[in-house]
Amino acid sequence: MVIKVFLASSSGSTAIKKKQQDVVAFLEALKVDYTPLDIACNEDNRAWMRQNVPEEKKPANGIPLPPQIFNEESYCGDYDTFFNAKEDNSVYAFLGLPPPPGSKEAEQANNSHIMENGTHTEETNADENLDESTEVPVKERNGEAHGEGDQAADDEEGAEGDADDEAEEEVPAADEEEEAVEETDEAHAYEEEELEEEDLQSEEEEELQQLEEQGEQGSEEEDEADVQENEEDDLEETQEEEAE
Image (cartoon, rainbow, N blue to C red; front, side):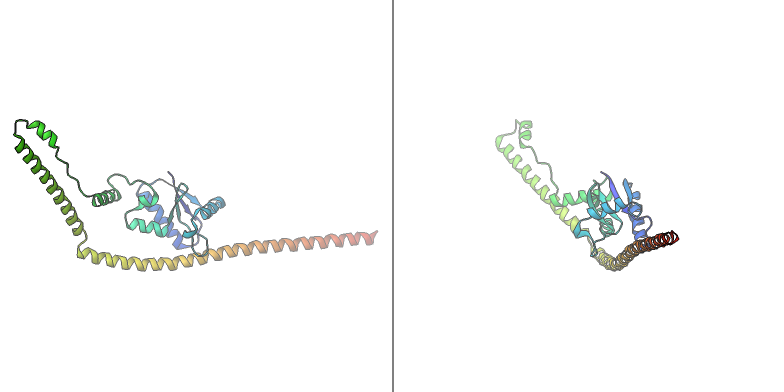
């Protein structure tokens, strides 16, 4: 699986450059192999990126801005979704990659699996106990087996209760206040990013409009040159006819 990051090497927007550097630096810090694809110097890369970004993920003007991230042909997301995954320690899931053993994301996934399924204690094998204690009377064997089964059930309930207590203790009141402050800061940062993105989209539209105007101006100059050349040819023909 190849991670593709579509970038604009010659973008005039400082915000776009900053977002691109943030994505690339974080991938390199995680030692994730990726392939940078420039849309500024390669028209095929630009066309492929715009064609493969889902319609519901495109901005209002229909032109997705870099950086855009793909896993092979599968779309992962843009900078905003990448930033949210980084904050949630779920970048590998965002990229569609398995988290490496020992990483925070792997530990978080393991803890989530334990919390969903609960802890399980090993069941006592009554048959083995009966085989090992053949000299014990039947009534005593039945009583011991029943007692061990009750003890196993009690141990399992106690383990589940401990897991629930640990889950409740993971989020103390102080952490909730810090999370509320962080969410407020993230909301302000997100609003600023939205404003920057709107400015970027306006800059992109202006650049496209300038390119189109330059192309139209070039066509007009070529037409004027053709008209002038035709007039000179007609004048020469007229002079030749008069000379004859």
